[in-house]
Image 1 (cartoon, rainbow, N blue to C red):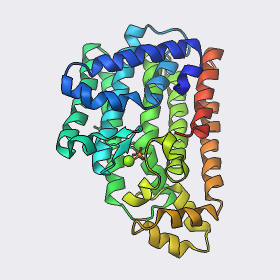
Image 2 (image 1 turned 60 degrees about the vertical axis):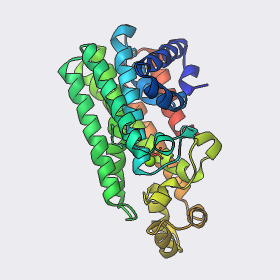
Image 3 (image 1 turned 90 degrees about the vertical axis):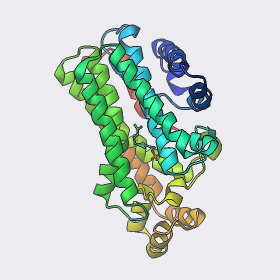
Image 4 (image 1 turned 90 degrees about the horizontal axis):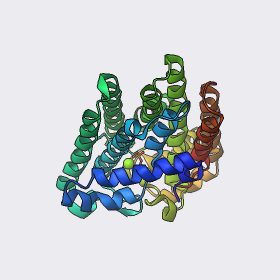
Length: 318
Ligand code: FPP
Ligand code: MG
């Protein structure tokens, strides 16, 4: 079961409608449906659910107003993963074969483009207006810049500041935008919108730090992708940055991560330091910051659900 279904009845019902509408969104074309349906079977739906939870966090917001944008957010996210898998030549995503592995990069680029275009079709058809479109375009531009930044510095050890800049662009701005859009479509006041945005940003930082830990230490059967993918593709993340600061074997670890060497040897060195605890503590601190930012004007049940989402982020195994 998806984690959001366990939150409350409203979230579970929203999730069910969301799943149906995602299926509809990819059903216009037979090939796109065949290529995308397995990919959409997996996934946590974190982005659309954050948006829906925020949109319904004061008063109930009609599904006609929220669902098309919720679907668009998941389509944009999945489009970015399809393109990310081409860039990383990944073979598995969400427990299934990636589009690039199955159909080749040429077709996979177009599958990603299609999902992306479909997202903007939904936004245009449902008259969300220029403010929403600007938030979406900015978040996609930031995603691209984050990815370009990462790909231009593969096999180079980033500073802490560079690491945080990258995860902000790659993940935190997306999650912050989902929460911001929730506040905007529900016509909340600007202070509430800013607070929800800050909540989403902190949740996003925590999410990516845990993602980077899971990439080394996750259970492959649960994460749906092989461990050590970041190291092999030259993406150097927080567990390594911290271990390089702490370990006596830092020169050896540096040699491994700057050449894409043995994942097992890197894991051994990382585990002999406080890097895992350090990453968890950092993630937990962002979760606390997220909690503090939740507007005081929200319904108690919504605060509870948003706190549960934040806790799920650090406890998650996939
Ligand atoms: C997965 O993260 C990838 C991203 C967060 C962003 C990828 C963005 C692009 C390819 C550019 C945007 C493109 C479009 C069409 C919107 P990860 O690589 O850290 O995690 P992973 O291990 O799941 O791949
Ligand atoms: Mg990737």
